Image (cartoon, rainbow, N blue to C red; front, side, top):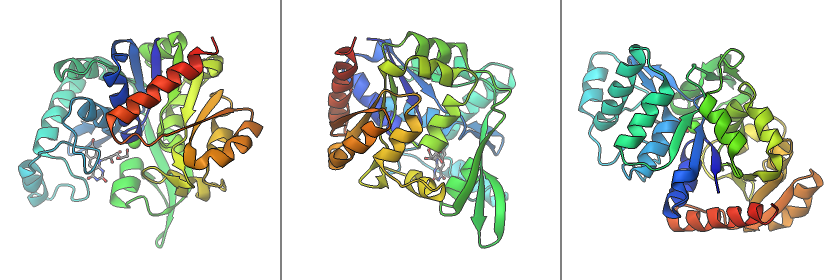
Amino acid sequence: PRICVLSGGVGAARLLAGVTRRKLAPATTAVVNTGDDTWIAGVRVCPDLDTITYTLSGLVNPHTGWGIAPETFSALTMLRRLGGPTWFTLGDRDIGLHLYRTDRLRRGEGLRSITRDVVRRLGIDIDLVPMSDDEVATMLTVRTDDGVAEVGFQEYFVAMRHQPHVERIRYDGIATARPHPDARTAIAEADLVIIAPSNPFLSVFPILELGDLGDLVRDARDRTVAISPIVGGQAIKGPAASIMADFGLEPSATSVAQLYAPYAGTLVVDHRDGALAGDVERHGVRAVVMDTMIADPDRSADLVDRLVQVVGSDR
Ligand code: FO1
Ligand code: CA
């Protein structure tokens, strides 16, 4: 089957590692959030694309889930000595990729075609499609001891360690950004659309709110499966649970079902949340209970097999 995975960073990367195991990779496209992307020290940083790229090429730092291991930091040491940014870490090997990407961007090439070449040269067999070649920036209005301020995603996530209360999230540039045509095609032609266990507000809604991508997913609702990023009331990783609470939503698979009800006909909930299946279905979303802990690629591959079965059996 043709599979399209709507992807953030770490959660999506682990799911895609399972796809690679199952030889489904050549028929799989990941449509990747670029709302995290930013300019740091003159280079274009694309965390979700790179997290997936490094995971699938075996370069990823397994302790952080992002960046490369082994890694050295000589360039960063010099950058900081000169007064460059101290709150963001870029390793030497990682900087190599950033120089390559930034050079081509400055020559006017699109992020999609640059990413295609990176993926090919690093031996990855899944097509990674940035949601857009146009810049979109996730911006958060946060409340700190110093008052209320709007900050960029990396400042919130890295510099503030995603601790502040979030009052509002918007995606700067989304009204004029164009979805990449390959992202539109991947969704429209997929037999199975998977919404990865990524943060709904920070990773998935930037994709769903871009141009007509959300409409295309609604049209594919019967063959769209979301995997809850909330298990046992907590996020698998990162601030998804705390942001839901900040927005007045109970952090639970039930709230995830409510958020994705227009887009996904099925929600996969972890067996630890099996008791929530009835609540999920009250939102008009079929609940499927599975083991969603996919830290290793074999378990992720098993999950992908079951998703193919679950949606395939309906068609
Ligand atoms: N996350 C951090 O917590 N601290 C960092 O210094 C950091 C650097 C970094 C550099 C390149 C890159 O691709 C990702 C990086 N990340 C870092 C992760 C990044 O902030 C991601 O957006 C988050 O993991 C959320 O997906
Ligand atoms: Ca991310």
